Image 1: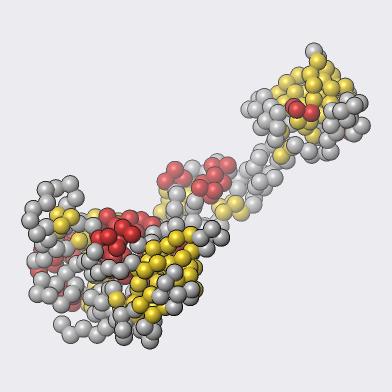
Image 2 (image 1 turned 45 degrees about the vertical axis):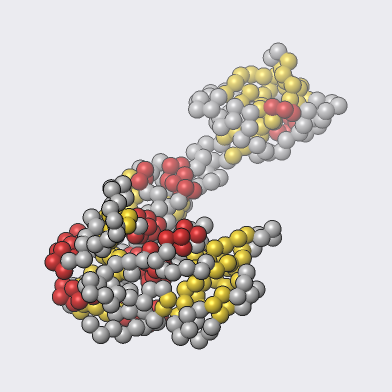
Length: 412
């Protein structure tokens, strides 16, 4: 197969022309399973949060005007008429000259409009001395302060994180509608690959790509479907790809893409359906043998077998598309940081280079990017690298001290 190598931006244009990266559907899920998912509708609160005026501190519920002249030299004396605990419905009423002892989170008794902190009072039998004045509303969380009845608490297209889960719990929701998770088949190919945990015989290596790519798929809000390792056999690869296309929305393979006799995936992809291969290679280092195909409406990314190359291309082309299909913005800010080149960093002449770097944070909080000299197949690159910087094909190096954008392999 004659390859035409293109720049990543041209590859992305071709992909967008042949494949619509849109959410695959909507589903209703339990809020217990909502972390990382994306809302498909506004969440309107059916309650006030909090649902009643409540004390923010342990202390004494008072009529604030009773305390206006209180100070440490001349405390105000009030009579204690009871106690209210958190979760307790109290029928007590605070009158002028009286107070009710109150716990943090307890409902404010009728008649009271403020709470004196415990440390600003001294209890004596059935009375209390107040050493500090309070203003109306002081140390009180008013009904609906956080969220009001009928207010939009969370918005459509918002991703559910820890804080959003707290909001859902606060308004009592147990079910929400979210973008359906795209199913992504993850396949490693290669006669040399062995499952981690199994015996490693001569000329074999453990498979790395399935775990790194599957985790990256999950980070994009998608659901990885992990296939067994498949050998470099035309019939086996074709059968596995057909199965993957049936059970998933997107397929990602690694290995069997370069120019060797055993690298067969590009030719197989053209046999599976139309239009077939749409990107036959990238004019980049690493990532040159990358192949992209669309088969009857579903997209297949055939990534290089070398782990660093596979992750570099994943972040370059696959991540934005997966995020779109999961309902997220295509570019994740947590995967980009600005740094200064710590030394001069060289490129591969005439090719767009994604030079792997490690980051060090300076005492001022800025990042320095140090290049990691390696080959794309070296596992140490994957272990030591924090990300990569892009060096245009028209440049031979990035100068020391130059500001660069680092595309992180994983989120900070």
